[in-house]
Length: 445
Image: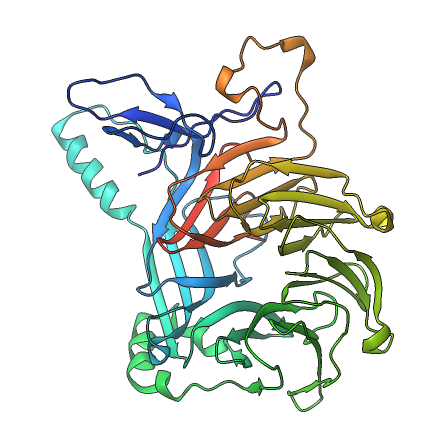
């Protein structure tokens, strides 16, 4: 189990991990551990979790691993922080055989915080503690439907009162699934049992597009125009989907032309109906306007945004900033007002392997999170600066060269793929990895 340690301070970042010796002959002191910095763990050492660094921490597994998921906005209220927590996820599996895959709706509930209430130690209180512990067990309900082919990416949107999922499949198709029934049954155990017995095998997509020339990963619903969708493939093509009156979609067969290699990610502007960004294995980030013909729609380009593939981008909903992560392990912040310069306004290097996911905090404009193939999730705050009056007295020598904006490093997952902030539960992060799902909130955000 991984250890993470940290306190929010003005003069230094969180102390995210400690390596604690478990060697029976030599119990050494706990030490800060950061991958890629300093010596690796030696025999007899293991990483242990510092629960004081977390407000909330839960893990879940669903059988086959999920490469992608999305958080489903619910009707339980915004800005909720009261525990226990309930949340809904839509995810797709990457199973060993094509026919073993599933599109899933997950309801995770009874998610309590990491701190137990204090006890006095009597026998009666011990029994009460055991009962309390039983009452605090997290719960998971799963509504699954068969899906032929591994699912590369899942993105959820609400079309009025109808939730839908856009699904990129390894078989080269993009499908749209209605989610209303799945959301209903995960709230009702009897309905869920009946659904899994009688209905799940009959669930089919409400629309499918097979016009891409191969598989892909890039997909994004417009936050401003319900039903408007972008999909990008590994053959460098981007297609625009426009909803029609009959509950279907018209997909423009003319691809947006510009990238020379695989389109890795797409992001609609949160402030302009017709503008979107893209990133690619050709190392570029491009800004487009769909009012122009697809062959002329690329308005701005940074040709060498990263040293290698640009894997992910995320558009801030509160500032004119675009965040990117690449195979070079770098995180870059781009000010769209200065995008023509080709220079980011900030570059951060903590990850020692490709960045797999990035996302701005939905409420705090300066905070973002990233995950990497180095099994780290990092939390950052652009507003943090070292306190010059504090000097180096509090700074651990091993942490002195860390970026001052680095708040927290979360570890303990295997082969991290994707993360999302919960839009209605401030500070709550959800991630998926080969090792399963993790839901957590740190003391830093």
